[in-house]
Length: 182
Image (cartoon, rainbow, N blue to C red; front, side):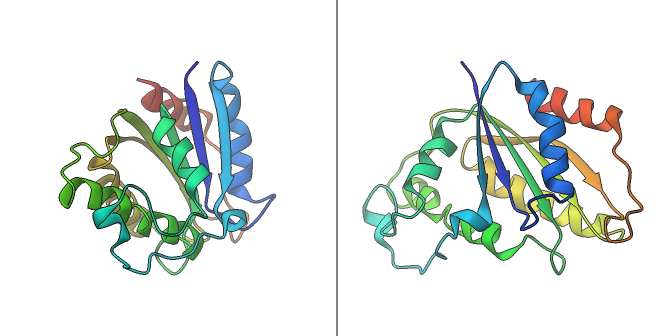
């Protein structure tokens, strides 16, 4: 059975990200779905201790289970709001903790550091029209995941959430799902 890893970067339990997640899940009914909210994970930031340069993993074990699911996933879907032009801090902490994989590749010679190839999708929601920020966030995630055997295949951007002036586009949603699955 294939596995979908959902990473929710929003603090709002009933916000737009949560709503889109609920819309996406039925399209992956044939998959095992594992969902993490980055605020609940409360990931410690990377402290550049260099442990991962010599050892597999991280000196901090707070994300061990998350990284097992991350490595095992066939599909990864990231849902995030824009905070001050970028990812919210809890999601950024997880991205920074990918350092363990970069060290595996560049210090210990594991290439690729994650054997399984994965397809990734990114949903960005913003209070105003922040497409330039969403593009930047997408490019950063693409760059981060390429070295981890992940390919950013799909994007879905939803602006106007602060004023409730947004709509869900079923065509864009289905395109997003199709692109992740191919």
